[in-house]
Length: 321
Ligand code: PGA
Image (tube, rainbow, N blue to C red; front, side, top):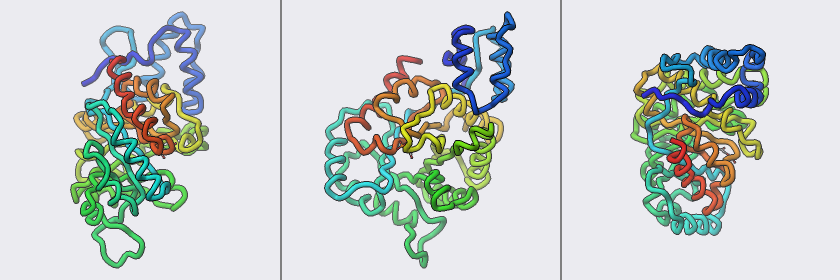
């Protein structure tokens, strides 16, 4: 399962440029003494110790990562956007797009349009909800149950999205309960995590992500049907995408967390996708990163051809492999 990453190698010059990109995540990265003749090796030791990665015994080449073995996964989160007409146009764009076969593709329309989308979209693309209730339906005004989502043909639900955490006020335990219930009903969970800008700047990115991961782990019966979406909050809807190295760094850490806290098998199998200002122009570089197993896309998923470009960025991954 473990493979040697090629994404962080390339000599001292590349090391120096990588260092600036990690700024704000782990401040001590910046303290590396680059005057040391063995600075490349020192850098990797530093990365390994901070990411708590298994060390490589296979020579001095690089960082050991545990790249995922799951199929590339791209989700389109339409959020609270669209009308019957605009959604009908988007669906016909998606139906006529040519999509690579080795990608799982999911779209998450607003609840009120799920039925319309299910009845008009190609079966090639699965449907997700953007939220669900924590348990069986009943007297819960304004909520939508997992049973109802299944009735409409939803296979997935997005949970823990930062807009629900930070605008609506959902907490880790509430989100964990929803995830457990949805999984128990056979609905897959796109489990979002991610840090605020101030948390990144305070060097707390890993702490925040691990705490959110733990809340899922404490609640769910199994990881078989979970895709983890790492979405730094400062990158969502801002046009400020994480650099490939910034995203890769957190993805490696999440995979390592899964390995240590769940199992090596789950760490390998679980897709860890990136979200936050992904578009047709930046997806290829992100997809090349070894631990980026796909994307959760907001704004750019509202344009059929651009979303297709993002889905097809799996080809960059194959070239990089
Ligand atoms: P964005 O949203 O692509 O518009 O930044 C991503 C998301 O919220 O999932």
